Length: 437
Image 1 (tube, rainbow, N blue to C red):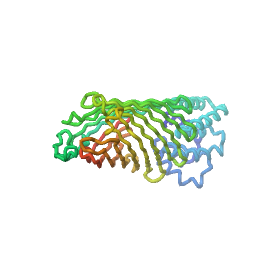
Image 2 (cartoon, one colour; image 1 turned 90 degrees about the vertical axis):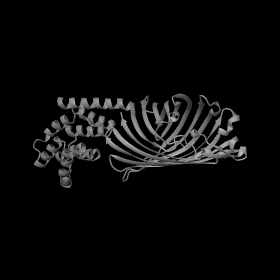
Image 3 (cartoon, rainbow, N blue to C red; image 1 turned 180 degrees about the horizontal axis):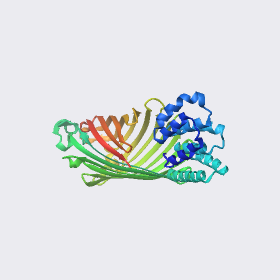
Image 4 (cartoon, helix red, strand yellow; image 1 turned 135 degrees about the horizontal axis):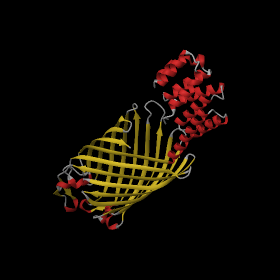
């Protein structure tokens, strides 16, 4: 959090040390010129000798704060106040530091102490402005809006997730070779992709937060309109937080169009329990129920339920690594048991992680495996379908500016199936431009 009151704070506060020595005056001049890092480099070598001198600690704290090192700034200001508890300028600065760190309660405490000293009008005006900033920050904390727009393009070697075989033997017809229709064979395409997504959080009480989410996606394949699709997803619900525990529930809805025609509707419920671990880790248990309804393929209408366990961990070490993993299983059942060749039991594993190479570049990777066993014989092949699907994704995010990033990605998918029509591999390479709003 950067506050526009800083120049006034500094000019007011530094006047208290008009007789400061040359080193402090040089440091003050550097801070005024927005060269706080140079001021820190000037002052730090003197810390062993001058720590405890209120004038020195004050200017060092101001330099640390403007150099985006608020934790070190707090230590310097605390030494200043230990020597001079009624040092108003220093207490204003430590209040400002707490605000930068998001510690509004500590900032308010410091400002209340300043008011108890009956400060001069100029300082009281500054305190009032900071109290206003605290109130505004509290209001913003109750409402959080996150949104982004992403556009991109790429290439997909198998847009229809189909076999590359041109002829297939059908056991139901004495293994006679049949020619696979062109639209059932592996198709290559150039893709154009666009996504708009937003999340709104509102803290109704300290423990309960309302959640609303929405996204729209356009996935267009050049010269293959039959496989181009669009989706709209909306969800709403709430999260209840109590200490390290969180319970969340959401209603989820999706509408999908294929080749410009209404194709599928999904309605579902998601429930999740999450426990925040002490070492920046999180453990979650979740369950999801969905109703899947097709516009023109009623035989595929189904109900699906999934349950899983997930774990994520962030490490405070070089490259700030983050990793996650989840195990899940579930089942999908067609509404009409006559079409149980589409019903399935499934279970899977997902693992992944990310590294922050520097402030601009992040690398990420994910690996997944899913086993699917279908419930009834698929008549043309005289067996029940059995799939083992594996997917690997690697990508990066290069931040071009504070709200714009370039994101190259590669995904390889391999589905090993005992049904030749659904045995396939797929490579997708894409390059997206994301704008955070």
